[in-house]
Length: 66
Image 1: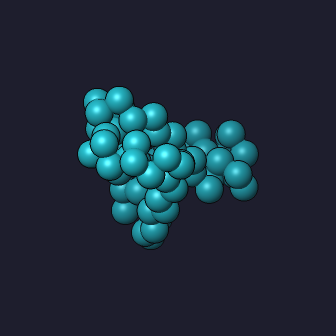
Image 2: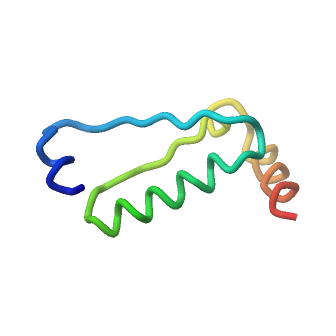
Image 3: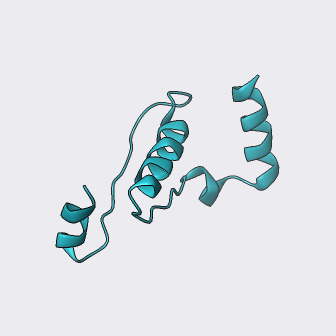
């Protein structure tokens, strides 16, 4: 996997699509950790981070983790 990534010689961008509460954020966290195991730098960005306030995100996380 690491060799394939290095052969690209450019950043790889992957989008994850799904309905609210379907586990997109959880999947991304798992992928970031898994790629880190292979020494591939990865970052996850949620669109919620762009249009919701910190308080709204905190409340949503509290509801979904309950």
